[in-house]
Image (cartoon, rainbow, N blue to C red; front, side, top):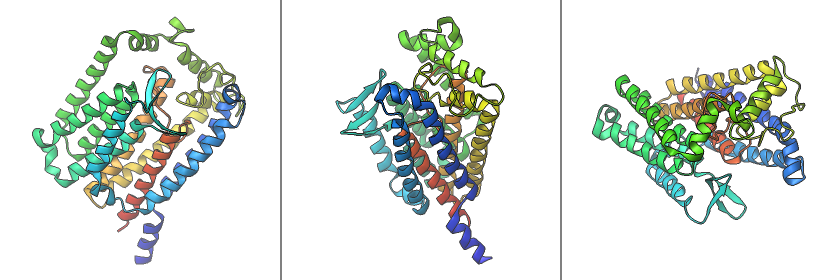
Length: 370
């Protein structure tokens, strides 16, 4: 019996490991397929995005192994420092080292190296909120000691990320905070109230924002009304999904990736998956995500302490929110907001941090074997 426990402590959650690595490999294949023509057009090298994606995947693998080996309880000691650094990085976006691409300032550039503070903020709030609530679980029952301080934190994060602008990441960060609060024992009455007020607030921001935000929202309601303007990307995405049918046109045979769908390797890679692998391919991919989410829930429920439970819950909530938001955007179920599909979309920072987060889940699962 003791031998079995030691084996589990060494290996962690096998299903989570296989699913994560499988999704990363699948993502590398689909990034190459989706980006082939765009890479030629942008750099003259058809393997440009492939090489960079493989590099980030290797870095992510190293980070995943490292976080799987480091005791997750270590993060609790540095939680206040981690959230402070995250806020500092978000503020630095609005200094000369902040990089603006496609009318959005989401990157900090130092030489050839760029980082996305919005991606780091997701991990930072998971660690901090988990630490804050695990220190005194009764805080979640108090408006002044738990609910209001954490909502203030979420609001500050939302404001800084929304200003980039990056609405989807801002929604994800707030969703993570509120989700961990709910797991910690936030009453259903408060939870429903917070979600309802948040939804109304986001709708109000979009409707009163005017200009580009309002136009993008209106294009989501009827993308074919301006199919060559604001609705162009969503229309091309829907055409790709529709063209795939049940079984797809075949891997590498997408038409929409031939410079019809802008940046197909990024936020809209799910559309290329639908075109090349069809409805069946999309279902299998979604099933993999559901299995991964299930393993995250399982690890959270079997965590050895509250900090581990809240951390595992936060990581799982982050994964679920991004999958839902990305697919919703690609299928024109919500306005285009610019959020990656975990492990699959091209994007070094997101891939690396998600793999690191999976390593934390693995470490929690290893300790739960005790």
